[in-house]
Length: 324
Picture 1 (tube, rainbow, N blue to C red):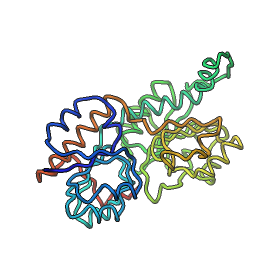
Picture 2: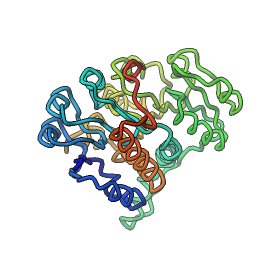
Picture 3: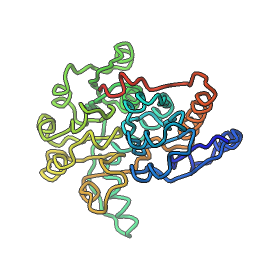
Picture 4: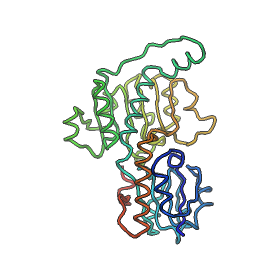
């Protein structure tokens, strides 16, 4: 019998048709609660044929132990930065993923974070829950400039929603759809420095690569407007946590609102969970009933096709997996 390891918790915890689809495969399912560290992942591989993973640490050591039985990795979602794609390619293991399934959901979450930051939403709800009536004066989004770092599917969907709020939108990225930008009134920033100088809000939508790790550091923050708000629904490691904390403490960065951290889940003393001008949600930007089912069904179909020796819906290109 085919044995499949399933670790993504949103797949497991969210009701939907994907559970029936999984049961109908007839596979033996080994379940674990991810994201798993390397040690936990190592303990579970070795006698599995397929792997539906979330953000588990799938290192060369894990892959070497998993072979020769493991035939395919099916990523639930689009980020493969926790997978050693180079090692998987060398070992002949295809890495599949599910592009195009969560961009609307993540874009909606980005606007939620922005509104929550600018309207002091948590401060106000905490006040009324505690029996108080404390109030802060917020800011409206109309005519403010949103800078998008990355202009792929998610960045484009954020742009559409920001324009609906009457915002000005500028974007910078390696891949820039000129036709989309023209249709939606998005101005192209020639450089990241240009974007940072112009934006009231900087929103991160680029993948994690060696080039983007620590991209938002003290030097880049210094080029941003005083009072800038930084949004991050991409990866926590794109931001230098010590540099961001310093900027939040000094007031150069007015607020940081993110769905990701450099350590997930964070340790109890993580500085970004303690500051009053920070909003952190637990990596649930793509966790809606609609998006979960799209991702789950795509990951299942990818795995089933690959195990049958057929062409999957989407496979990671190892030549571009680490290119920003």
